Image (tube, rainbow, N blue to C red; front, side, top):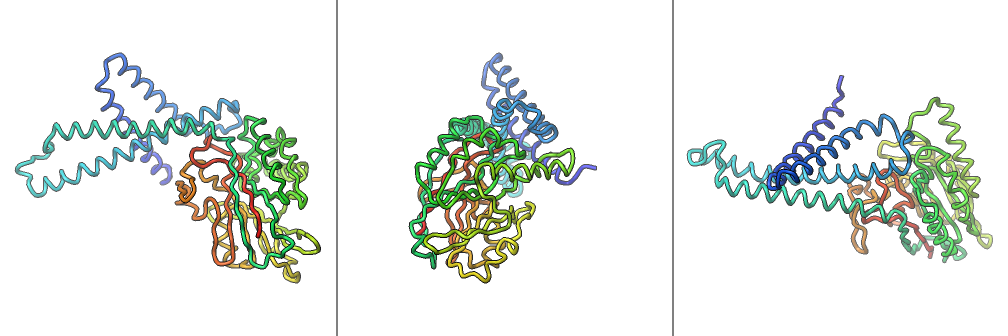
Length: 418
């Protein structure tokens, strides 16, 4: 029995293909015979491969594809598919705008404009050709932009944030914290570029380095080629980390539950191999000149359908009887902030998250930021404040799926406490 979700998805694909085909056919009818045939064949091949990939990639998985081949192939298909979606949206909107006046004309003056004979037919055809060309131009420009975005996947951008936290002891004022998130080591294909990003971090001489989850895409072994790169991260107060949703291996099929658990234990061991202190629903006290603040680390906890592995009660257990003026939380998914932290843990001054990647696509300039991911995550990039509580969402060090960054660059965050 066909599920309702599958049926809706199939109708969505058919709508996209119909409007894309209509636009292509309308534009190509003005080309000569030979060029018309070759362009039409190219369009059909791309369409068939894209449709086939929607089945093949989930069914066969990433492991059967050569890494570089898979990445570039996926990027091409993502660009083609998104371009066709844009074309379909424009064409559908244009259809709606054209149908409305024709309906009104039919209802109120059907004697002058019989059904099937739109008024000013020649102008209607001319307008339709213009819309088709415009839709294809916009769709093609977006596809080309996504191809360009591949060159930005290692273009690390520093974001400098100064934070004044209530009750922060003088001993911790001026503390320099580096936050990185979403490394996704399984997506990397340029160790030298990654090394330069790590070296850029160390040039800032941070007092504390914090990693907020997703060290790998699926498997613990993905970080192995980069252990000698990321173990260069050192700081006087230490390097601390938490797990993200991808670290649990939930998105691939395992031969057995035992192997999945062994993968997670191996990943935890790799955190230790890197010299990072992995916080698994627990906390540590950071000390400077006999003064302490608390650093809390929770397993992945998401309010958007992701498995809630995190346990805040366990993570803060024991802090009740200690006078700690400031508490900092590492929680991979920013939806955790409003769903639980803001409601039940108002003594946590700062929460650091990642997860969204800023969708690796959008507009991110001083004074303005936009990405489609904001319609899913209210807090998706940068700094947010509610009363005396702050949330910072890192845009991610790595990438997954789309092998690039368009408008939203990979991020290294430097937070200075005041």
